[in-house]
Length: 185
Image (cartoon, rainbow, N blue to C red):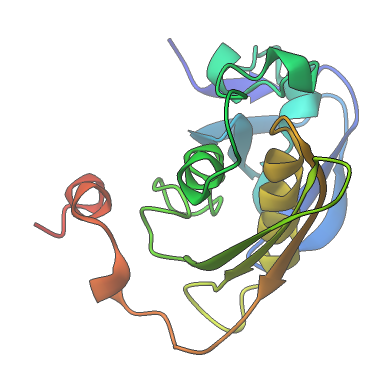
């Protein structure tokens, strides 16, 4: 199976690592380098780009079921009981930096999670996360991916993901599983 593709329609993409919006035109030849969190990292004639999962059809690709957004929050299989940090972290394992094949939880990028229950039995969630490098232009996109995943959880009606720099990230924060994927152990 070849990872070389020709775009079947114009598609909005994000230039990596700068985070700039870019349109890749129909007929552009690209090579898929990663399929991360349902999104695609591709090499094109002008550099590396992230194509969102919602635009998989431009690549004539399907989004794996585990990365598709939950259609209704009532379908959230883990909706029984109160919202926990573990449920949030499980959902955040579907979010990736487009250059690194490890999710943001196993990369050690998720620092703090605050769950606030409001009077209507719904939740507001605030997450502090960091990035592997302060100059990463993809930060806002990764944070938005995390926010959208949190909003898929049953009972969550508001989510905020804030990028913080304290403490500074280092490789020791990567989980054992993440280190194995990256070949660090």
